[in-house]
Image 1: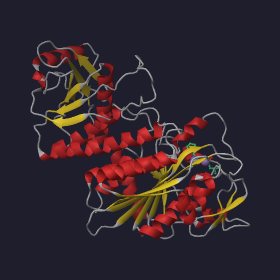
Image 2 (image 1 turned 180 degrees about the vertical axis):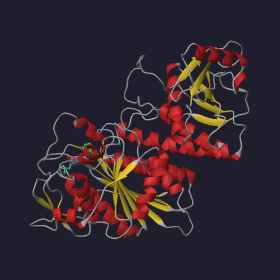
Image 3 (image 1 turned 120 degrees about the vertical axis):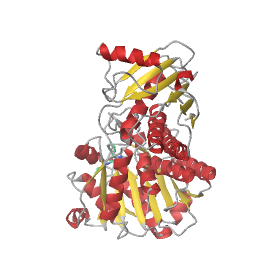
Image 4 (image 1 turned 120 degrees about the horizontal axis):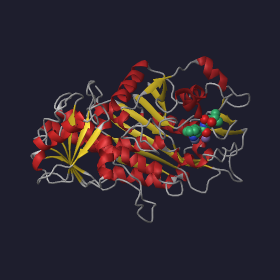
Amino acid sequence: MNIEVKTAKVRPQSYAGDLAVHFVREGENDGPASAGAEVRELVSRAVAAGDFAGKEGQTLLVYPGGRGPKRVLVAGLGSEKVTPELLRNAGGRIAAAAGKTKTEKLLVTLPAAGLPPGEAVRALTEGLVLGAYTFRKHKSQADPEDEGGELREILFPAGGGAAARTGIAWGRAAAAAVCAARDMANEPANFMTPTRVAELARDLAGRYGLAAKVLGKKELEKLKMGGILGVNRGSAEPPTLSVLEYRTGRKAPTLLLVGKGLTFDSGGYSLKPAAGMHEMKYDMCGAAAVLGAMQAVGELAPPGLDVVAVVPATENLVGPAALKPGDVITQYGGKTVEVMNTDAEGRLILADALAYGIERYKPDFVIDLATLTGAAIIALGHHRTGLLGNDDGLAARVLAAGEAAGEPLWRLPLGPEYGKQLKSRIADLKNVDKRDGGTILAACFLQEFVGKIPWAHLDIAGTAWDFTDKPYIPKGPSGVGVRTLLELIRGWK
Ligand code: BES
Ligand code: MN
Ligand code: ZN
């Protein structure tokens, strides 16, 4: 992502860039007040012809003459309340129009009414930058049918003001962090290895002055992290566990973030079917979301919470040393687990990471994100992240943050009646029972390693990719979770 976003004192009519954007509400039939007479005339003709009404999602591209912008896009905002999500979607559509016209320089006039300018600029920045996202690293040649990727500069003729500048900074940091998470996820598993995950964690710590620590295989062995090591046994790539610490320097509560970093999940000997297995390179989207959130936190330095991130990473493959169904492993801290199904591996690496993070960093709150269960997709489809946890207050905060970020969640229950299903005949626990209620059972397993600390678990299996079709969410990985976490941390009181 290499897009400059700034405010500037320019008149939209004399802006000499590639594209100027104006908004209209539905029924504003004389065109946008912010545009010049010629644009307004062109818009009212389109309205009279029945081609444009300013409905939400409608856009009209016009080509006024003169010395102003090469093109003008008029974007409808409908007649409902203007919300951040509405503006993020509008930003995404503008980015698509900019892509089609190979626009490098873009000017966006703020909608006349609705949100305070700081919030409007923030939401538009997020939508524009996220909508302009592309991943072309592995194309050896430019594809002429590929649209987008040219956008370099976004101007808001907002007259400046501290609120607008702050809005841009927040929107940019959030969007850049989401793009970083998408990049990590798009990267194939032969590039995004556990070692690479740890390198990225170290890099970002260096950039933002966070404390960083990476545990390699030897250290994990010394600490007896039998979950991560067990899952790793079929892999030629050594596992890593990365820890990043953001400290406010004040007396603030500590939030522990844990993200599932399965850089590839074949299922192990409980092998997945071939169809769709390639998608399991995305099984590190929890890790990507946590690292993305740490990037934005590092950049914006919010004052309310100290944040510690623990990111366990490994592949789950087969081989002569791999775990076999029925094997017993010992998790960090000593609990034993009968591995009935080697494809329920995420909970095994998260259990070590949660137990270690809690013991070592004594957090006040814990949140983990994981592409943990196919059952979450069965339950909620691709429109909501599954939320489970042991604390109503924390759950309410996470739900509100997700709602504000346009990343909605839905809470599922936990309870001892479910937990009982994970009793093993020969070890302390088994990692699966029959399929029913799979998302809840997975969370119950994690709960065994969390205890009483307020904890929220986000099962992002349905939303980490193939998320709700929206103008600022591309096909492929969505970067879900990054903006929810950021919203939660930024607003913490
Ligand atoms: N990474 C998968 C979950 C998953 C599946 C995420 C599909 C996204 C799309 C996880 O490791 C897994 O395989 N879970 C099993 C658990 C089962 C064996 C209890 C599943 O959901 O089938
Ligand atoms: Mn699996
Ligand atoms: Zn998995």
